[in-house]
Figure (cartoon, rainbow, N blue to C red):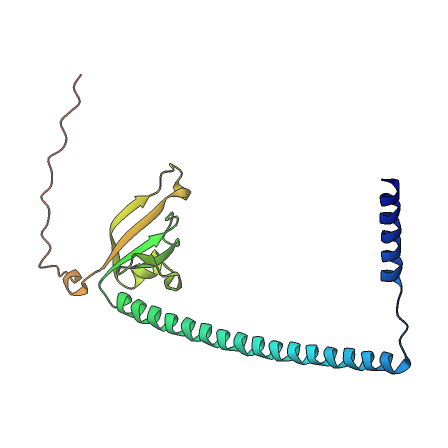
Length: 182
């Protein structure tokens, strides 16, 4: 048993010495290895440059496609916005409607999404001849700043607003209130 262990140890030591021992190369072999390494390095650099060029081209194409999609989306949004702003009935959304200067956003009635580019305020809509028809509060908080509102505006027909003194009826005077009970 001791001899077997001894032979195993000798084998392991011999294996490591043979394995670790480096072969000495001639100058021609060293030069050939250096040339081969330089060629492999040049090949790797060439492949890397080609891959980089392909990635850059793909990135440019992707950017171009993205810009085209954004342009198409903006054109569709402008078309929808124009269509909605030409109507006499409009529905707006407000994150917090606390004054006439609060921000309002037009709601696309086709998909019930807010059109962020349609930001306006009630004051501007009043000046354009619109009036508030209905206000719906959304949200669960009791704080006024946490309310979300859906507000319907309708265009006022100015021909109906022109009142002449002939059309106005005078109200009858009400009798005085009764005296207080003692």
